[in-house]
Amino acid sequence: MAVFIADDPRFCEYGGGMADCATDHGQQVTLRAVESCSGDMTSNAEYIILVVGSYGAYFRLTKDEIDRKFPCIIVYTPDPMPEEDTFSLVRKMKEQLDLPVLAIADSSPRSVKNFSLFVAGGCDIKWLGLRPSDVVALKMHPHCMRPMNSKDLKLAQRFLEKDEDEMSK
Image (cartoon, rainbow, N blue to C red):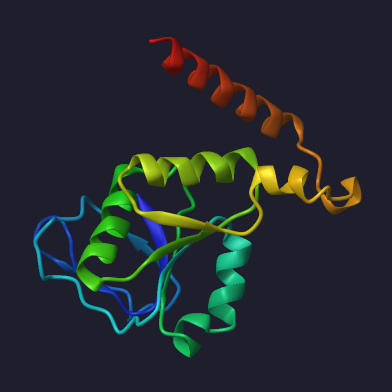
């Protein structure tokens, strides 16, 4: 499992090693199960932990060195669905560095699902950007939105079916 991290967090990895993100700014970091040892995480971040929903947004933010201009940590997971190690790492950053966690994502079914997975994984995270309900409330012109493709529609349908199954239990 891997994530991309921009800024300089240093943290304890499974097996006792230390991951140091400052050495490879904005590069992929392989995570093994993150230990819950208290006091092991450090960073110069002052503002936020920013969870980004697309590699394009992550690349642009790191290219513009946003994390250096406004000391923050930027996290992107290339996995279609974030795993427990990612939630653990973000939770640990929030707790040990005492920084709020914000998510930048579009309103695609994948982004909505990933945001909900972070919430379900125990991350106190706030959404930045348009929510699906905002599109309707703002009466946005259809030309402002990209239509969902067949993959998006199938994913949205699976989420709805899963929610219906969970609600009937």
